[in-house]
Image (cartoon, rainbow, N blue to C red; front, side, top):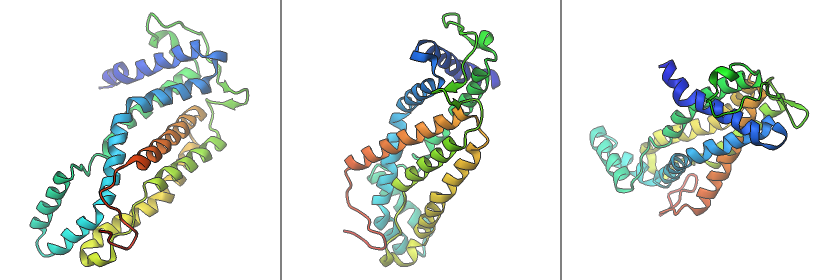
Length: 250
């Protein structure tokens, strides 16, 4: 399994890292990380777009979902069938938002390993493809002041702020009050989303304090690009209705 991980993820990203370092002006490792971030985001763009649209559609369906749960409050089997039918008719996959995260997690792990080795100039000769030039050593300093191999508190805080804005753009509204008992699950989900709005940024900062600055910079760039993508898709999202917090909108 480790050999497969190295072949599919670690080595390609490592070689891309060194290749970009060789060709980008000034051999600035910060620019290398920015370039890798853009390439990764482009690679997962179709998946993240589908995920964002699915989350927006789920918000759009909140009144219908609450109404179904109220209608079949005493029959969980019919309730489940009706909910699945609603998702099918509206072409919404409630699990779609999980897929991009599952795909990006191994990429994040591979990038962590790449930065650990690349920034410390380890395994350059052993891990490079024959057609990639070996730079010998990689300068850890970006913009003349930022050490990408050591934790950077400023970058960790910026990553946390970006995480907050990302969560804010997709925050879930409270369920309609008129939905009664059927809205309990949606109320719980809304409350959890609001808790995550603050929990995840704090966790990002805490974790970022202990990560190499290069990985925190990637996290910041990646989250910032995700926010821009969410804003763009939300602006152009064709809603079939809307949900105002605490109200049913027909």
